[in-house]
Image 1: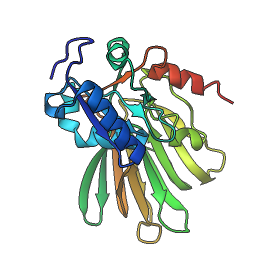
Image 2: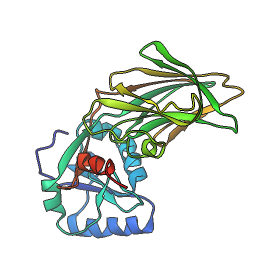
Image 3: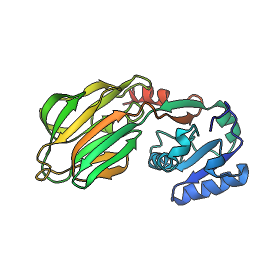
Length: 262
């Protein structure tokens, strides 16, 4: 799947279920052709950020082998996407700048066994009922917080630091900063704790206190596991995704702009 630089002759267009995305897919296929992702030089999802994550998950084996992804926004925010435009696609792809991203890997222990998932943006632990979650935080085998009382907590990558993490008042992380954001969600105790910055080599473990009384779910991007008892998270540095962005709208530039937005 090794890709020669800036040569994208075989394109795989995929779209979300939105009518406008389906229509755009048809127009692009008529103009540029279409091929199966297994034989493509690039895959182009048409939709929003959620569909981008869905595409990566669906075509994970190909993307892990080096198939780059160039999204076009036909959704709402489209932070991981490029602007939708039919014309000059070959030129845009030729000039596109790559962003290499390693996802987070989650291992979640539940009453029914062990489940795993990958996340590009963030992994969130969220209370399932009206009662606050009680969570013990362990970093590299050492208990750093005996009990967090909150709606939840999340770990965000630099690429995902402008998503849920920013809404929860977490820090925006520059791409390539080699750190992760640990951000509480509506913390009740300790009330003034705003989270921490961790090295991307850290192993983070969350233990759920009183899981029967205070059930918690774990969500890796859009993959959810209910009633978790313990969640371990590490950055999967052996996995690299390549996302392509238009010149002048690179992912690191988008993240930098978010730090100065009002």
